[in-house]
Image 1 (cartoon, rainbow, N blue to C red):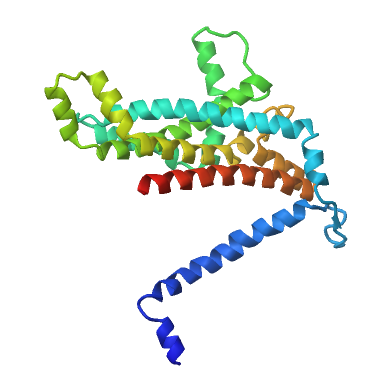
Image 2: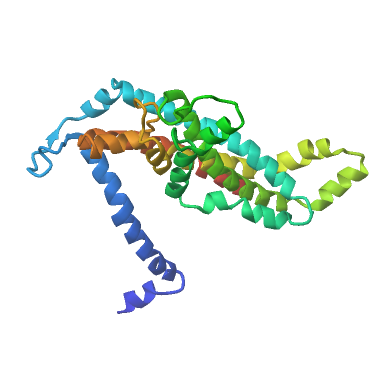
Length: 298
């Protein structure tokens, strides 16, 4: 009894509050990750899933993956998709953040409205853009024909090149508010006295932006880019709703290809191997993010 009372002292009471979250993470995060890693070293298909005869094959699934042209293409698509979205949505989000940081009428109201794309569920956004880029009843084709810019409908989502552009455009539309709000928050932490002192010294707007705004926003920019990379790299629902990885596997990401292998082709071990590759990449980026934030705090 005395030991229990000592444990529940003020110094240790925090462990009691952390324990439920730790158990939750262990059961719903830790166990699936470990189980998925074990599954990737086995040969599990729909044939032997119920029977329980799971053959251990070592690294064979990973060797087969890197000889799979669809998997290699999925890596390239994921990187292309992530980098394209990240660069464009950061530039536009940064510009909007700087613009709406100015004090003018309705700036806060308009900035609030611009957050709507980020607040709408991604599956709903995917359906909206699928309707916009549709071939026969698409809003974009109708608008372009009305302006006389095209004669025949463009098959946006059924042509490899344009399908990727459509998915990138949709994700940029979602990601701009995320970049804008985080950079806007960073801008509010910059003391106005620095700008006033620079004005007294004769600095122009461009000099203030280069010498004050950008350097002081460096921690915010790093966080925005790394978090944006993580959120974008693991995209699934948007791509699956709009193209399902097609046409001809041209928009398959690592996440969608893992889903296809597991739940359409019933190659569970191969699907888990793809998921583990995705997990390792994101783990490396997450560790970089934690290292960066810890270094800034220190």
